[in-house]
Length: 450
Image 1: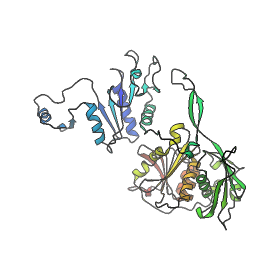
Image 2 (image 1 turned 180 degrees about the vertical axis):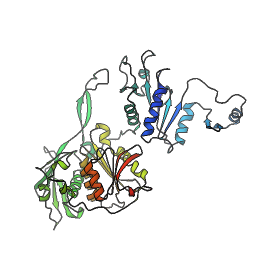
Image 3 (image 1 turned 120 degrees about the vertical axis):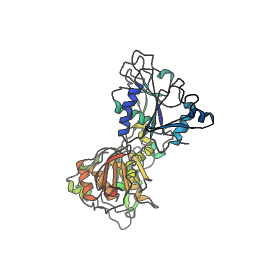
Image 4 (image 1 turned 90 degrees about the vertical axis):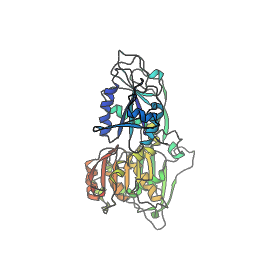
């Protein structure tokens, strides 16, 4: 049975556990999380006075007892936390997002330790499940993977939430594995420079797209899913209207040859002519970086060409938009290893995932998603929401309009041009979509109750 994620805040008496927790709760609440706080004591306390009514209820076999007053209701278990707390957290799934337990040093939960000078030594050496140590004092010996300042509540909240994300131990697929490589690194942990070890980094390589043997553009991307990237790019640039305009898509050369996989040849369908001249005329040269947007254009008006406004609807639940970027975490396998790639995902009206990809460039990630939708032979659910990591730029909105996706949800901010195009093109643009909250800049009428 699944449980509410929980973390113990541990440390010596007087270390500042309660102070930290009372400062951490508002920070987590401001991010839209529903947080429970539990106080754990190593000493036995009589929950119900001997001879009281509630004590008699417990003696009679009640699993749960309570005491109600005009100020509220207190419910208690007569079991030890090791037995009762996991059961309670299972019952509260869907009602809570996180539980913080103060003082459960020997419990099975992952732990944050609060330490200050003048008390006993840090507890982390004897408890390997401590994932971060919070202290304003110099640490006698570095024993924690993270050392954080108690004044930086935002960083503490980030570390806590990052640690609670589901692990991704599954091996990468062959296509995804091409996007990760190992390089040597040495880490500074706040007190010492650690020995050299291997670090996973995101691979960035060029992809040259050719049409009928002629070079169209070269873009820097994460290798893998090149067909989807190419199709999404061609659609976004207005060179194709759909899969029926395409004949074949194939990498040039042979496997094993140097540079193989970095050139992809596009052959149009019989009777279809792909004219690359408008694209060449609006870009300086032939190189597109993984972050390229308006910089390679002659004018903003060139980008507006072909962006027919989207019709009204559909109406979505605001919670579907608010949780959209959480779906990115489930597909960011390369990001979990490298921290160096973006992601994009297409969802339906119920928030169900239709397509999702990663890339060093956020525009490339969107192109891969759109290309997958174009190539899908049996797409039965309509994509209505595009979730993207990072900043929402002008070109992200343009790609959504070309793909006829009416809602864009971004983890970070939007640019002024992105908002302008969203307003003009009928796109609902939501930004800072994190932890159940978001800002909406345009066409809020697609949100139920707006």
